[in-house]
Image (cartoon, rainbow, N blue to C red; front, side):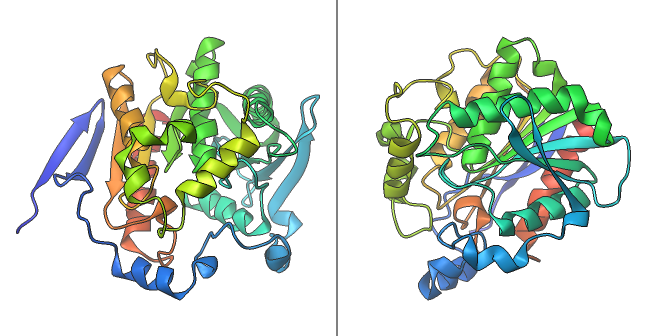
Length: 323
């Protein structure tokens, strides 16, 4: 049957959306092959160890490693061209709140700075189980506050700040925006990009069909999510909005958002639900689900059309809200 496509426009966003709304039921053949071969070898797999990536660490001239605020939060500043007046992308990394920045992640930060023509500030927030909630939230938010006040010292334009988060980093990006709103600082964040984010507490997984349908076999698993929440926030209420930002009752006034999900991701439905709530709250938002893909589009080759489309969506949003 021929696919039907609809052009959707919302507050300056125009994007192409599949009317099947990410229910193809067919796993991308490239991902199917990769999953059958070895999940540990998928690009971005969190199962690899720090030692396995030690040989690929970015050379120091390309990045500044500094510590900021009274908590000595480690951040990495990527601006290899040494340009001034660029927008600032504060990036929160994936890893289920239990993994710090691994050396291979630095290549993605470097790619981001080149692709988006922005200074990337990666926040190496404290992780569980040694540092439980709210350590990661505090580090993420305090790093944002520091960047907003000091970004010009490394060449950034503090009037053009965005936050970007992959997986658990997307959760932190959303939470940072909500706390900034509470502190009357949301206007300092011009855009939030949430890439396959967990927007709810995994102990609420029964609310989301995708959590049951894709509980295992597609890289990110329900058991891992149940593990990380026990490590990260074992004593928190399951509707704490700083653990699950979808539980915030009032989303009005948050920064414009790009929310990305993948069809075969347990987190798909809660990401979609958060995007819908943002829209109902009057927040400019772009939502895109990639059919046939798994969590964070892991396993795709670097030249995949889907990854180019993802970058283009972010660039479109940046042009709309950061220029």
